[in-house]
Every structure is written in structure tokens, then in C-alpha cells.
Image 1 (tube, rainbow, N blue to C red):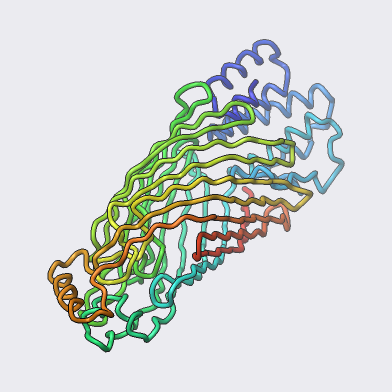
Image 2: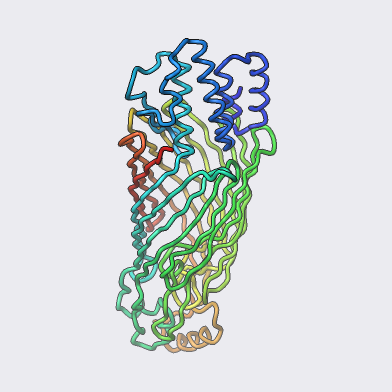
Amino acid sequence: MVEAAIAARDFRRAEAAVAEARALAPQEPRVLLLEARLARATGDTRRAQRMLEAAAEQRRAQTGEDRASPFLSTSPPGIGASSGENPFLRVAAPEQGTPSRDPVSAEIAREMAALREDVSPRLMMAPAIRSRSGSGGLDKLDEISGQLEASTRPGVPGGRLTVRATPVAISSGNLSGDVASLRRFGTNALAGPSGGTAPSDTSAAGVGLDIGWRRGMLALDVGTTPLGFRTTNLVGGIEAAPLIADNLRLRVIGERRAVTDSLLSWSGQRDPQSGRVWGGVVRTGGRAQLEYSAGPMSFYAGGGYSTFEGEGVADNSRIEAGAGMSYAVFRRPEEELTTGLDLVYFGYDKNLRHFTLGHGGYFSPQSYAALNLPVDWRSRSGDFSWRLGGTIGFASWREKSAPLFPTDAGLQAQVQAAAASDPTLLARYPGQARTGVTGEARADLEYAVTPQLRLGTALHYDRAANWNEARGLVYLRYRLDR
């Protein structure tokens, strides 16, 4: 009952079951072990440690084990364990001495090691690359970054405090020199038959800073878009996920995030004709979602609303809604296979995906609907753990026609007058409607080099119509045992 309630994050039911079990069997160390797991799940690590120490003491009294058992040492040699983020990391046996043959003592030792993984300070370094297809100088994007992270558990508020610095370098490539391509950027459409000038600032580099805190059902963070980009914004968010009924959770998120679709939307650019800087779009909004778990199945449904703002960019808004379910085909101690169904809808007020002055350079269709079928397989073997998954889907989206200069009526009037005498010049971007198959593939791999040091990689590939994006990172995470 306790394990099932924790898995469903029904902590009130779990507490009641633990209290009942303790009344029935006050000398049973497995009851204390369950209470420790419950305390760890709720973020109360001090209570978890007390319960594990008491459970080990009770079990030693029952079995007559040596009181110098390594299971209660502050840093048991050779014991590694899973973190809250990955339940399939290695749990190794002690390297020194003779491991206990008692399964309960061994289970207590594994739980103590898992707790140590949660509470110990960590350092992480994660270089990453990202590549989005598109037209050079416009919506194409290549990114190289290197996240540096340190995290610990502060004494008073508890939870985990994380500080990050992320150096980032991005590039959109070179804009083609033909007239039609040049006219797609800035105010080049008003430069006459020559088509104007290609932008000179097709790359940007900076360092993003962020500090975050998480405890149980509450998480918050605050930071900046990369300092050194042409525009810089304050970003952050807060998330709360309280349990409101048996097996029913409400997740509420409020956030302000950078739009990283393109160099224009993320960093901003300078128009070579007018000298104006525009771009640096941020999304501000919130969403709420209900989540229900029942055995191997879980369901969710929710929606949200966001506004989009940027320097010299037309304001925009988006509504979104989604629903879906997941099903655990099988669950074993070191392996799990899940599948499901996701329904997605969102729609923007304006189409601002272009790169003339006033546009934001981000995908913003007036309606987008998709049905996705994901599959996810997690497993581990010894020091090696992995998560492999993929999604196949079908999507339909529609974009309205958009003016070249949505924020400047004077410029729009000029380009309309020029288009009247130049059939090669368009004063508006045409609308379009498309449908097609979408796909996604992902792989997360991790190897425990030592009980404290882990080496991992994460790979991701998305494709829709003639657009694709690939992301990859390699990370080293080191745990500083106290």
C-alpha cells in the first residue's frame, strides 16, 4: 500500500498506511524503511536518514550482525545509487568487506546510498550542440553550448538549490545574395532592385545565468538570457504540483522564457538598412494541467495562455490545450516499457515567423493540431543505464497571410506602393496550410565510471515536413560525498 501510494504521489494515504503498519509491528525494520522512502519522496531527507539509521539498528539487533556494518558509514565504499531524476542508475554492492547476505539489510543499504545521491552536492559539466534546418541567414540555427552546474541541499529550506552558467554561441549562417532572399530580411524590401544588404551580425555569443530551487511539489528558478547577446532578458518560472484528491494532481506553471527558434528570436539582430535592432522575444504566461494515475495507466488534460514580446517585434499571444494518456506495458525492478497517446493543439494570434522588421522569427501558426504516439523503454544493466524512445505523429497547421512590416504602418504603405510597380516584390507573405507525418527519436545513456562519477549522453532528433532539428549533449556529473 505504501509503495503504491508513493508511486501515485498520494502522500496522505502513504502516511496513514505507515502509521498503521508501525502500530501493528513496531519492531519491524521494513516499516521504518518504508517511512524513509516516504520521507525521501516528500523531500524530508533528515527524517529519511533517521528512519534508515533506526531500521539498520533494528535489523542488526534481529540478525546479530556486527555493529560495525558498513551500511551505516557516512560514505559506504563502492555503493552507488539512483538519483531522483533517473530511477535506473546503478546500485552496487560494497567493494570492501563481506556484503550482507540478509536481503533486508542490503535493501536498507541501497536506500541509504540512494539518499546519499539525493543529498550530496553535485558538480556537472555538459557541452551540447543543436542544429535546426532552414534558410541560411534566416531560420537556420547552429548552437554550441556548455552548461556548468553546481547543486546542493541547503539546510534551512531543504530541497535542492542549483546554480548554472551556460556559455552559448549561435549562428544562422550566411544569407543568400539573390534579390528574393535579401528582401526577406530587415527593410531590404525597400532598397530597390538591388535587394539591399545581407546582415553582418549572423552570430552571437554570451553566457546565460540561472539559479533554481526545488523541493517536493514546488520548483522555481530565475535567470537571464545569455549576457553578450544583442538583447538580454530576465527569465524564470514557478511550478506547483499539489495532490488535490486520491491519485489526482493539479500542476500549475507560470513562467517567462526565451524563444530560441532562431538567432533573431533569441539574440536579436540589426537591420543593415535602418540600423534598428529588433528581436529577443520572450514568452510570458502560464498553464494548468490535471493528472490522474490508476495502476499502470495515467491521464492528463490541460491548457494555457501566453503572450510574446520582443524589442521592435509585434506583440503576439497563444492559446494551447492538450490531453493524453500513458500505459506501462510492463514494469520490472530494472526495466520499464511505456506507450501512450498525446493530443496537442495551439494557435497564435499573428503569424510572425518571418525576418523582416517587426517579425519575430519564430513558428507561430494560427492553428496547429497533432496526434502523437510515443513509446519509451528504460532499463539498466550493471553500471550502464539507458532510456530509448520515439514518437510518430500526424499534424495539421495553418498560417495566415502576414504583412512585411507588422509594427510600422508607414513602412508597410511604402512596400505596398513599391509592389504595385514591381511584380517581383511582395507586400505580404502568403498564408499556407499543411498536413503531414511528424517523428521524433531520443536516447539517454549513462555509465557509472565510479560510484561518484557518471558519464552520460542525451541525443534527440525531430522531423516535421521539410524541417528537422538535432540536439546532442555529453555530461560528466560528480557527487561530492559528505
